[in-house]
Structures are given as C-alpha cells and as structure tokens.
Image 1 (cartoon, rainbow, N blue to C red):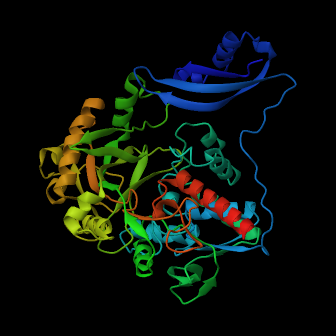
Image 2: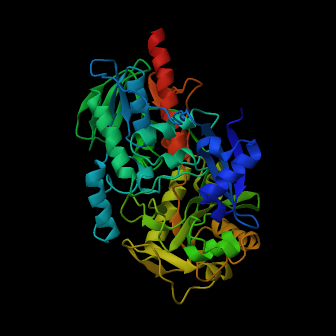
Image 3: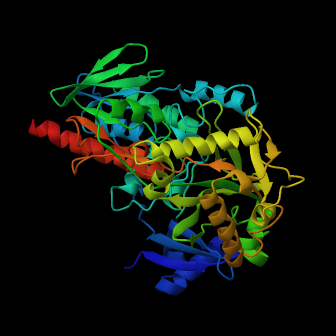
Length: 518
C-alpha cells in the first residue's frame, strides 16, 4: 500500500489538518478513519502566480508507528585512540572532529578564536563601535563564520557526501527537526551558539581535545611529511595527520603556507555589496496578494543574470535579517548578513556580487599567488576609508547607485554601527560597479519594484569565498606534503555550512582508510 503522497496546498489549506487528511484520502482511496496519522517529509514554497506549498507526506495506519527520519549517532570514548590534529573549529573542523570519534580516532582541535560564550562579548563590542578583536569576531572563533550568518543549510553538494547525515547530526545536537523537511532550511543565529556548545561538549566528553586561543603559525614538515604544528605562543603539537580547516578569512594561513612551499593556486570568487530592502516590500514582490498571510514565512529570493560575460547573483540572502560587520582587521570593512530563527526583522538583505575570475585580478595586480587577496583587501580598505573610518559602513540608496548619484539621505537600516552616505558607484572598481548597476536594472524586470529607493546598497560584500585554493589530490591530501589534508571553505573546496561539514566528514573517512593501510 502506498504511504507517501505529494500534495499542492495553498497556505490556509496547509495549516488545516482536516483538509490535508481529506486530500490524502482522496488520493489514496484510504478512509480517513483508517489513517492514524501523517507527517510532512518535505516542504517547499512555490511563489509563482498564487502561492502554494509543495509537500510530501507519509501516512501510517492504526497499529503502526513512524520510523525515525534522522539518524541517532553513537559517540564512544576515543581518549586513548590515534590522534588527528584539526586546525579550525568551524563547520569543516567540528564535523571532522565528530567523524573522527565515529571512526574511532581522537580529534585535537586547535582554534585561533574563543569559545562562543566569549566570542559573543567581542561581537557585542564590535556592534557598539568600541573595538574589533582580530582573533574573535564574526569570522573567527568557535563555530566559524557560519555561527553568525543565519545557519543557512541549503547546498548543491549532494553528490559529494551525505547531506542528511549533517542535518541529522545538527538535529541530534539541538537543531529544530524542521531542517530535515524544509527545502531551504536554516537554524538561526540565536540558536546556533547552543548547538555549537553541545558539539563541543560531545567532543570533550569522548576524550577529544579543543584548544582555544591557539593560532597555528607553522606546519612542521620533515622529508616531505607533516610532523606537527606550532602555535603563536610557541606550543608544539606533534602529529603525522593534520586537517587544515581554517576558513576563507584566515589570510595569514595562506602566507605561511606559501613560505613553506605548499602548493596553492588562484581561483575565482565574487565581490559586491549587501542590498537591504524593507521585508514587507520583498513579501509583496514574492507573494503578491498573499503577502500578509500570517502562515507564510518572510519571503526570500534567489536571482542571477549575466552581465558582460560575468555572473551577477544574490548570495547568502537573509529574510527578516540584519547586516553585520564581518571585518577581521582594523582599517578594513566587510559586511555580511544574518537572521535569527524567527526571521522577524523588518528588513531583508542579500549579498549581490559579481563573479571574478583570476584573469580579472591578475590584470590589475600581476600574476602572483596573492593577487586575488590583494584585490579583496583593497576593496575592503576602500569601504573603510570611504565611510570615514571606524565601524560605520558606506551606503547609498539603490536607485541612486544605479543613477550614479550621491544619496542626500539614507533610510533606516538594520546595520547597528550605522551608515554613512557614500558614492559607491564612484569609488568601487568600475568592472564591479558597472556590472552591478546593469544587473539591478535586470533584477527589476524579474522582480518588479526591486529597484526601489527604499532599498540601500551597503559596502562591501567581499568574503563570498577564498581567491586561493590549496591544491589536493584525489585522496584529499596536499599535493606538496604528505599527511596534510586541506578541507572546507578556506582550502577552496566548499561554500557554506553543509558543504564544509561534508568536506570535513569525507576527509576523515579518507584518513581512516590511509591509517588502516599503514
């Protein structure tokens, strides 16, 4: 007997249990009285024309029970097992640590930043325009950048590993099981710190080690084999298997790797701005006449066009969200977006970025390894100085940006440190600003009223991914030195929480195979 059914429901029908039962009964021919219960296995919103929920439901009859839809993983003690060093406690690093325990290995995690409890205090100082800690901010610290960027879990990396395993582990450590159902799941910045703490406690309770304020400054090698690492305070950690999961903002890592002759290569990335609209306007654009329906979540969007042979697209869209300062150095300014679990801010923001290929930055900065990083840093310094220094961000009304006009006033914004009216169209690199201006006109054709003067562009969004890839072979091992396994966003092999977590997991699986062969 068929137990799974696909339904198309409007928002009111979706919330009406009796209506859903009637639909299931009509599709299946099973009497409602014979159906004990149903549950939703998959849910997505189709906002084309009239808003609809596309759902997959599973039913059980009387005398039956639902099977769990997520795994419950058992973590045993590994205190006396073989050690693996993991550099970085972001998604790649922490999920690698969990996989180490599942594989019977002991993870030793070295994190340059602080635990989430202390990290939150440094972020509060940044938001209040008081200070920036280069080792503890929105990018660095326990949980990585993903902890304070909404916890968006959508990924296209399903062929690279077990997405459901990552989501199941997140649920096991405290995430809402809804993330297993939604097509575009998210956790929320308000919920993620506790989940990160739960993961930390699991690692420690199983005999693993986590060392905070432990910035790695050198990889020790001998006869083309890693032997350990040295931290900035002089501490030495010896090991012949090292997972490098430092994230895409750890520029210093690329520099010391280059000094040690570790192979790296230039790669494409993207830079642009954050665009912020009133959330109600995005709801109207996306939901039409249904925009006030209380059953509908804050609307999001995903949009892309080609402009002069380069993609221009939305990135890390945060409905009901907030723009935050993601700088990691003084005299540089970077913005990012985040949302809490309820996504109930009156603002919607998204990175709108221009694709940049190596030939673009090599043309400007020369054919050398750090040309992309140099371009990124110059972009961030321009944002800092064009906002007058400090933590305020340069901003411009969206229509004024497109029309090449300085904004005489700015609307209210979610960006707490404050905004400064600035002609971003003038001081941004022309090949970025011109593509953005043309793209916004095209976006308005696809999403009418997107090009609104109630919307603002805020500078700059520059940390979409790393301009550098640390080369590795088919076994995830560095092409330069044995025993070094670069993974995650910083190594250039992932782009987000889930894909980074998958890369960390798959890296450990390969290391386990190597150990078994040795």
